Length: 289
Image 1: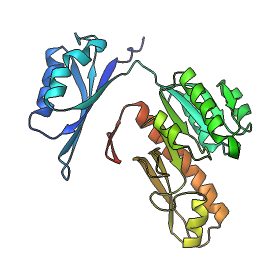
Image 2 (image 1 turned 30 degrees about the vertical axis):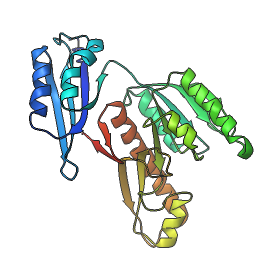
Image 3 (image 1 turned 180 degrees about the vertical axis):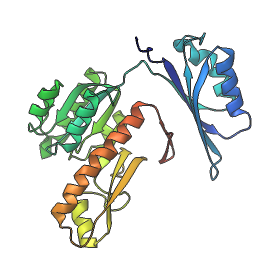
Image 4 (image 1 turned 120 degrees about the vertical axis):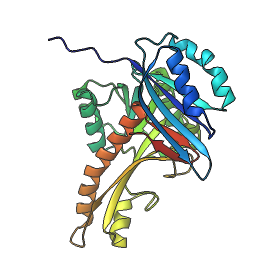
């Protein structure tokens, strides 16, 4: 038997002040244009009266070309003061990976991409060290070594920005890229950079968090995938997880357990971003499962 082709769908993401009739109005728009709703998720932040919505709908009988939705849905968006966007499931976002010497997150992302778990294209890996070029070659991904010298950091970032723009990248993943990005770099790609920090933020920000955790004698260590902002390790959190440790664990034990945790947390955050499951508001996120 020939398997059925995957359903082509669109995802509508809405963020706006809470108001009666929001879900009914959006659902009615999709219904009137022949769309079939597949999944609906919503959340209202009671403290701020802010409403967030994710609707995925089948495009098989939807009678509005996606390019025209912005015009036809516009009056509804204006009425409810919506910040909104539409994503086509057939579109594969283009992801660039930035990495330094540690390879565990990079290898995990590339493997998950190879087996189809991450539905995106990876046209570019950028590194400030040459160490991971063989890994990139193994997976057939172009690798560019951009050294970052202390007194020439802006020059290096300008080259990185040119590479990212030249490859028409949609979002960037810092897979243990051990450089602090400048405000200029971050502002060039707002809400488009995902980082993995090797601690359970907001605890132990900055360098060597596992050493800080060891000195503090904590019983849990964690990892955090978050969007990058101008404030170091303070961006909206996408995903976190923890692992238990004990007084018997050395710093090396913490580092090993942390590596296992980091790659899983990062891959989850990246996947949810690719699948348009993350909505930002303020310095928070809502992640629709």
